[in-house]
Amino acid sequence: MANEVGDQANADDLAEFLSARHPRVRETALWGNGTLPLEFHTYLSQALPPVRYVSSVRALVFRGDEILVSCNENDLHIVPGGRLEAGESIEQALHREVREETGWTISELRMVGFIHFHHLAAKPAGYAYPHPDFLQLVYRAETLAHDPSAMLVDEYEWCGFRLCAISEIPALPLPAGQRVLFDEALRMHNS
Image (tube, rainbow, N blue to C red; front, side, top):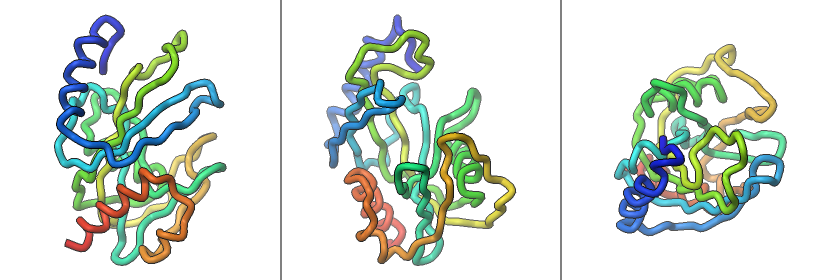
């Protein structure tokens, strides 16, 4: 991951990578109890971006004609996942995060795209994560087996999940970026 000294040099390689791709959706959000304004762009691409920017991984998880839908106290999501831990590969992190959040083991991973986040405010003191840019990789996966005892719960983790018919997804109140990722993952799922 980028450190403060190397941020500008590293930003150049990210800018070069992004310049060859076109974002499908632009969104904004406030994270950290409203103290971290972010702009983010969703890209459809199977090209792996510069890994030093990848802070987390997510997956759209299918089971036949169903997909996992998770919720936390505020939102519905169709992309369970989370942060990479030190020394962990992207694939290891994805398997661990999906299992911890949903209890499902997964297989048949295929990259769908990525989300490029850009902080709109100065780096807060003590902020331990990449700044001003970071990426989340998004994959599609298939379920293997379910073990509810593998789920971990904390103050932000999902308060539940369910398998939802793919046909129900258009009616759910999902952000535009997740809809774009879903459409692409469904195309891949059906091919």
